[in-house]
Length: 275
Ligand SMILES: C[S@@+](CC[C@H](N)C(=O)[O-])C[C@H]1O[C@@H](n2cnc3c(N)ncnc32)[C@H](O)[C@@H]1O
Image 1 (cartoon, rainbow, N blue to C red):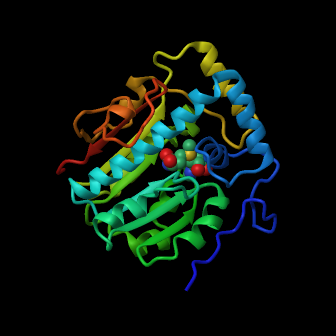
Image 2 (spheres, helix red, strand yellow):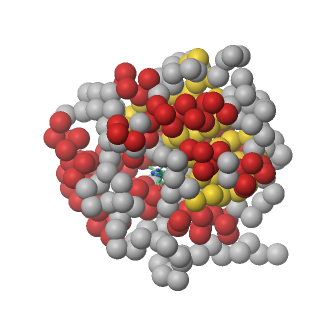
């Protein structure tokens, strides 16, 4: 049977999709060279490229995406993880978490969660497999994710699970308390579980560039928040860092995946020890 065609982003019959406002999911998709974005997203990125430089923005997005791939592979291959909760998963791209995890073990379970309904609209067609689900939810309300029937159906929290927050906490403001969000997930995780976080950093970034990113996202559904390495490290509280710790993502278990080298981000993986 031929695979069902995913809906196009231009399909205005899709429900609840903010069409007139740029969204992080669609801007990121554009920066990665994807096809699932609207004119408003392309315009927002064009403004960002003008201020920050197109190569810099695209390299940052790709460095992050490659880190996600290596982290999932490491978790599945080296750490034996078979359950993944990918929070702020973004639009399906070339190599998604379920494809990488299920290459290692076809029985691996993956639940994608994203606030943007276009992710589920595209994902439902692409992820029509037994071991994958896609949920539209807001990580700032972690209990709605942790208690979601689709999440509970696939993820057994009495066994180790990797929670991924890759390039998503920079859409959570200090007032929304990122530490509270991680703690809610950590509180449900079994010992031997993992967390993976990457985040835009203000360390070593000229203030005018930060202002440029902020201006680029000013009209989008979420503002963008930069954090220092120390603030990002604090999000791993309660976890033991997997070697090499919190680093520039292109240096985390590098391979020949062509990850660009930028100084825009930090990323790492933490393991929840026995309580
Ligand atoms: C830059 S993309 C990252 C996608 C993917 N994690 C990756 O690293 O390749 C950020 C994603 O986080 C989602 N997002 C932003 N705020 C969110 C929230 N409060 N809850 C859930 N998802 C959110 C956006 O819709 C977007 O798809």
